[in-house]
Amino acid sequence: MTPLWWLALAGTLLLATSFLSGWIHRGPVTTFAIYLVVGILIGPGVFGLTKLPLSREHIHWLHVATEAALVVSLFVTGLKLRLPFRDRGWVMAVRLALPAMVLTAAGVTAVACLGLGWPFAAALAVAAVVSPTDPVLASLVSVDDARDDDPLRVALSGEAGLNDGTALPLLILALALMDPGAEVPSVLAHWFTLDVLWELAGGLAIGLLGGWGLGYVGTHLRYTARDVAPSDFLALGIMVVVYAASQMLEVSGFLAAFAAGAGLRRVELSVSEGRDGRKRNEGAELDTPAEMRINPNERSQASVDHPSQTVGWMVSDALSFGETVERLIAVALVLAVGIAVIPAVSWDGVLVAGVLLLVVRPLSTWIATAGCRLPWQRRLLIGWFGIRGLGSLNYMAFAVVHGLAGVSVPAFESVVLTVVAMSIVIHGISVTPLMQWRERAIEAAKQRGANGRGM
Figure 1 (spheres, rainbow, N blue to C red):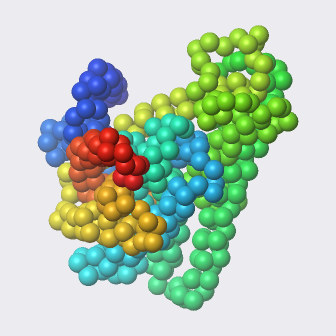
Figure 2: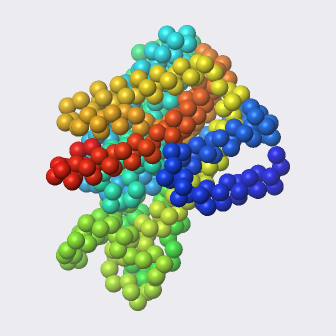
Figure 3: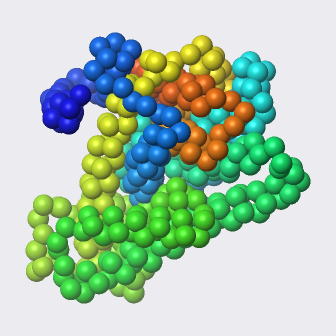
């Protein structure tokens, strides 16, 4: 396909999904599932209009594109979570991003070793790649905006924000163990010190400090100057600076991006609650995010009488800009998965996907949430809504570029692409009916006088 045909296809897809968005959102199929099907149709498996080589020499573009999409998506996810750090939602997110993710990786490693006959290091690598959930494709089960404190959505959003960073150390360990000359004790010591402790803690610290510091400076400079111009470049600047700093210091860029969004949200909370030295506002507005108290389309210097207006415009612009960029990149990448998946699909991938989605993920989250006194319905839904997507593609490309061994690149990519495609289809079909069922159950509980949030 020529570039002109690609432009025509992209425009047609965007128009079609925009025109039909009302029906799509009410139906059982997500827009990402539609993009996947279109990719399959134009790929070599059906009409053969184009093909997508993912060999070691040609896969670097996928790593760069997915990295960009994830950084933007994780920043937006962190920005939407307007919860105090002491909130139980963060505790649940950590349980899902650490013990549940490690248990998931252990289960997939066992399947790859015993079911596929792969060596341990290669099995651990594919497990690390397919274990994290996706912040981009999980939009239907993540928080809608900063007012959304639904415990299910908060848990899934927090998990997706954290586990793209917490899974990378497992992949690095797997790649290190593929070296035939590796001394396991020294590899483990180096890995735990630098790739676990330093990378995770450093990523969170740099992101939180960067998002809070740059957001605070930006808010007060723009308020002092009565600057009402769009501030989407400020959000982009925070993302780029924090991500660049994380890479220079060799810490997790994904955790840094997520924490930067959370840090900018701390600025909004601080300003909204009057912790900047001004008198604390009175009334219900304290519970309303700053971006909800302003009209982003009506800006005048004369109306700026408090920093909360400035930070409200900043956050509103950041969310609008980030979500647009995120969706555009995601459309292209899901199309790419569709193009590549039919030639790559295999029974090995179907086996791993089936066991992962139906057994390992639900069981791992059930164990990790034990003792949390959560309703069993919510624990089951958390176990089911483990959508795989761009994070897995990013780690797949990372593994191929950084010396995957013990299994062929096509076999490795086949398993990952099959898992991602099956997740997009299965979760895309089931998410709307299940969430609608949950909403009906919550309403029925409220009518009976019970607490519907228990779901």
